[in-house]
Length: 141
Image (cartoon, rainbow, N blue to C red; front, side, top):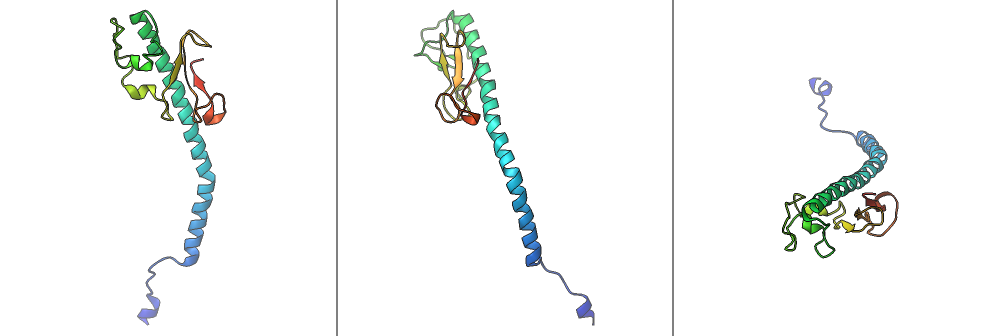
């Protein structure tokens, strides 16, 4: 008689597992797209902050050197001293990763710029001009 009353439960039933898996699938379907949307917007936000930092560093470079870096020197002049700039007081940015956008491409700059004295920008995730969402251009204008 003791054996029939004291029955050990060693696991979950198939129905219990199906209910739990259904709930997890429903949560993933609702939460997943929201997380992906947030991650995408965070890259654009990071790019905006980095563009402003690079633009400020270019201003410091200009104060010291009397000019902006040339196209040949590029933004690397903010990290490593070019041979043609004796008054360089850098580095103006901590390392070369600071001149790479969140999508792994180098930031671009134009001097004189189309929007201001110097334009610093990235073309977004697609690497082409224009676009929306993650593919939009991010610049200091």
